[in-house]
Length: 360
Image (cartoon, rainbow, N blue to C red; front, side, top):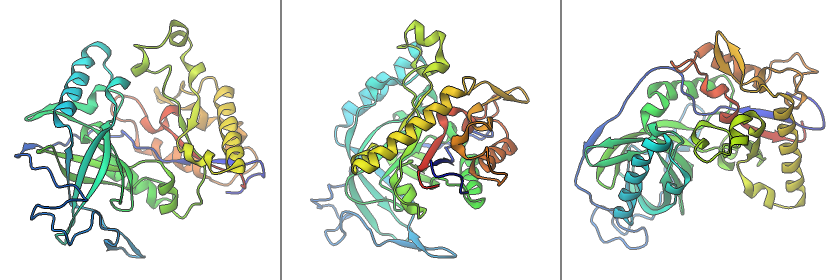
């Protein structure tokens, strides 16, 4: 939707919590770490197989797309340290109810992905604990199971190098798959999302694999590289309460601003930096204008006022009657309903993602 030369913001779909569905599989198996991509001695990883499989593709109705694996095997280099860190994070929930930043350090890891045709590919990666609240940690038969943030170092999985592995209950299981698929079908940008059976240091866990909001999401949707913004969650939220000052606690909405999700974009050159600064300034102006951004209600449920305020021209709604991304996004999530707790997860301002196009 073309609006004005000064730029507009296009809304992205965030991972949602919408209905009630809980799925998990807690089985264990003996740990058997895959070999390093550079040195392969195990029969499961013959040297003829490269560290990753960039040519794996699947047929769709319209084109060839990167193949989706049927299984992941994740083995952390320092398994003892990883287990101790996850256990300490789990114990810390009793005090803060949140996963604090001190437990979100990166760990070197080897990941093996298995595909439907039997091919098995290995890659190096950095992983860390993912999530704000304690639902991203749970006690399993072999220790603490956790949602993960994963960044591959060499190859890709389904065309994606940076992704999250969510415990299904944190995203209400099947409903996350349904909502992201539906959003894509109605023309909204949505991350690649699917279930994946996984072993982590020998323990079987079923995850929801979800693409992160990074440049490759834009590339996979034929959108030029652009700045992506998201809510800055460092201050004024329930999971930051333990470290917030009294001033922040008593004026939370004043600290609900946005930040650049892909800082690499600003490093591309002076023009890119200026575009990123302009987009960030305009979005934060919208946040500041809408001081009640998290207090709008639909049927008693909290939603973000930043999307419902038609006077915020940064979204291109004040001079056009055309249904745009903002309208479709809001309508879709309102039609689906809340997450069962009276909260529209994807309509909370800090859960939204925006792409800035200065030429619209």
